[in-house]
Image (tube, rainbow, N blue to C red; front, side, top):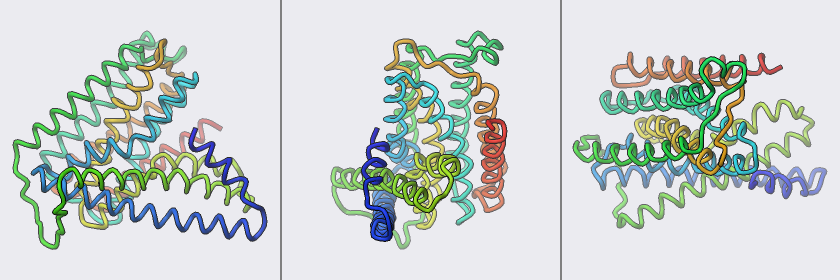
Length: 347
């Protein structure tokens, strides 16, 4: 695992004040790199949106989400191959809860997020449908209500079906987007005049910078916290859980700060859909026996995920053309409530 390797390397930094200075230096460099990578990612995604005539929200829901979801896919597939399906499932479900409640909530609190009702409504229904598909699949193959006592499963062939649905989703999303015209304010927008190939190269460099700097930042902060004698339980419940969603958070905050709220919304909705179809699908497809789903998911994590998704869907449904700060506060509160309940039940 890259995270374990990075943590091992960083733990070898000398103790004392010199070591702490090095750790703080790495944190500062990572934060700067994160910012630069996110700037490049958002700018090139917007340029691609205007170049192709596709709404920014749909670029966020497809290309940007595919890039920022790759860490979850990698972790889940490796975990499944190593015989840890709980980690693969937990990674996907936890990311959906974090993306929808924490990230979208924080983005809306920073600045109200404007969106096109028809486009976002369609994507939010797909987001909710993906969550329901995951729960129903695990429930049905866990022999219905026996799942609450024996757990469920995602068979290997269902993993391939999830991946097939993913291909159809991406194809239809782009095809539908091509039918409409992008009528958005281009004032003060500096559209990249480079070739489409060069824009893609810059886009993926931005994605790589965000992901790699995240992979270095979290273990560095974790090691710094240990040396400052912060309890490991607090570290595990905050930094480690927060780490896998950092690329989506930085991308959403950067997009919001630049005034591209629809790109932030698209990234979150798309990431949730991909966490089911791509992350769970890929992990199940490479495991002969499929993924087993622990009882804990049916009693706590699935209800928590559906609760946050329903809050998000209702927020979009009753918002006119903008997700305002009140909606952001509601989404963030839903995330905090689910997180507190999760740890209360677990303890």
